[in-house]
Image (cartoon, rainbow, N blue to C red; front, side):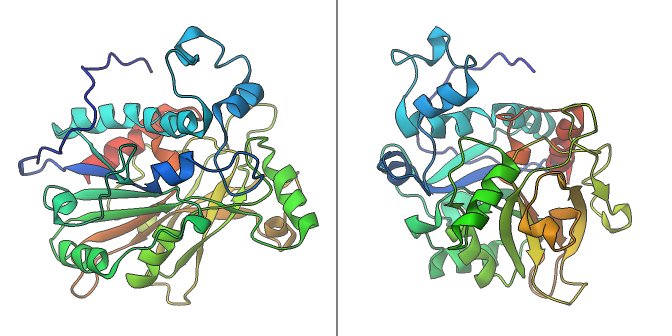
Amino acid sequence: MSITLPPRTYNQNHVPRRYTPGKRRVSIYWTWSYPWEANRDVSELDNRFSTMTEVRRVAWPAYETPEWDEMTFLQGIAGTLELFHRSTIDFQKVVGDVTGHPVAVFQRIDQAGFRQPIDNRVLDDTDTLLVFGLDHLIAEQEASVEEIEALKEWMKRPDTCLLIGPHHDVGFTEDLKQRQMEYRHHGDELVPRQQRFGQYTRSLMKALNVPVLNQYGLRPAVVKGTNQITPLTVNKDLDKLGLLNGVTTFNFHLHLPHYAVTTDDEKTVNVLTRQPVDRERPHPFTAEGNTEFNSLLWMPPKSERAGHILMADSTIFTTLFGGTDSLANFWTNIAKM
């Protein structure tokens, strides 16, 4: 999908979007401290993002054109973080066309060092908030009491939607052989043997009584003889919001989290989709007899909470790893909720 970009601005104060009946205002919140992630010691093997040098080596020759050189694009880890930002441009375009509102993008701590917690400045003009949990656990990003209270108050507003997206948790064990097994299972040379994400989103889920834990980094199965991801197992009867109309697959990504439900109360969390996992590559998850992992969950309004809670991985909203018409349909459904 080729998009002609409008003029680009940077480091500007957010301009609130006016409420328009029937038109959702969607915001993205990156949970990381951009400086902390970008300033990581690249001699550390684990729990950091790749540098652009590593990306170029693995993805060669994809980033060998002038637009990605040191005169044009950030190198080191910072360049890789910018790839994530750039990868949501298509999503923002789809949502903007549907809603008539631009997608606001916030970072917990941005490139310029400004800290933006989730508070009324973020929530007042937001109807759907996507919280992308790409902070490493060792960064110790935690949702504050004030943020939790602001979110609880916001979700008293009817039809609000909080999407929580902690990323994978690869190599959580001290068993080095298991770490190597997980690494060979997903097969991504850019992911270290241990890469644990989502401390901020985990703290958010705990405080909001979301009985879910992000586990592992699982490689989806593909249609035999192709590189196309296998279709989702969709629980259409549970899809009361129509999120999966026209949706058969999300995008392929080498290491997706399993959203394990940690309660026996089936009415609390609805598992809307499961993704078949690659069983040709050994992994502790499949060794336990599992053939699919949970990829989209929904918690309907309950008690004082009039808003919805969804759980889906951040990579479902990016094109860094490719995109499909089915994925665009999902984005459209999110925008029209």
